[in-house]
Image (cartoon, rainbow, N blue to C red):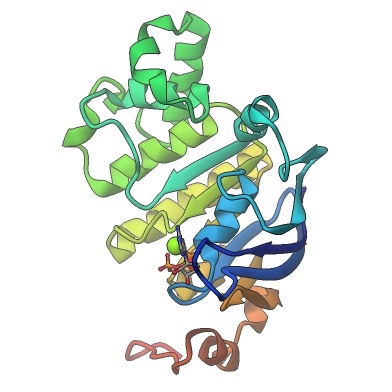
Length: 254
Ligand SMILES: Nc1ncnc2c1ncn2[C@@H]1O[C@H](COP(=O)(O)OP(=O)(O)OP(=O)(O)O)[C@@H](O)[C@H]1O
Ligand SMILES: [Mg+2]
């Protein structure tokens, strides 16, 4: 469970808060998509959850742990509970698929490259099991730099899940992928979400994807939560309020 109570974030030198008095509780089992136009505060929201951003005021609680005010050791434990996937994958291109997944065992530790020799057989088996789940077992020895974007994001997902997190965060994980591949990656996320009983929180610009896969939608505008509810209730009016423009449907849709 994730609880945010009255969270406000203001970046140095800016007047307007990036997140403004945000209060929300999200539960295990929910697949949450966060919408909002550029600058609305989506990435800031995600960064507060894994402790990469400290709020100016308010508190963030993950399960039993206080993220706000956590020291280094406590933050390491929190980040072991939180898997993260990125728009640009953040993989190490010259390493193999399996080695990249193994780096997920270290949480966010930067010195991981030097430590790759230190994994046990059990850990390697665990990495291979996750690779099987994302359909990449055949590619375990391939260098990541030779993969397509969709395959790279599958490695990113495997790396995020190898530590058995309770929360999976994604900051626009499909923004660099074509629509078909983006849909495939969301399907995979949904499958993993169900299999591992996660709380999944994904920032996304594609409202159709959010409506197709999310069990709950949050919409941010200028750092404020302007919608929190069932995807079916995120209608044309909400679209306009969120993005400041009308939704344009492709011919044949609606
Ligand atoms: N490091 C920073 N320093 C100063 N201002 C920042 C910083 N990071 C973000 N901001 C500002 O905070 C606000 C929220 O930014 P954030 O990156 O959370 O938005 P976003 O919804 O993720 O946008 P996008 O869709 O473009 O990724 C914006 O006004 C942005 O300019
Ligand atoms: Mg962002």
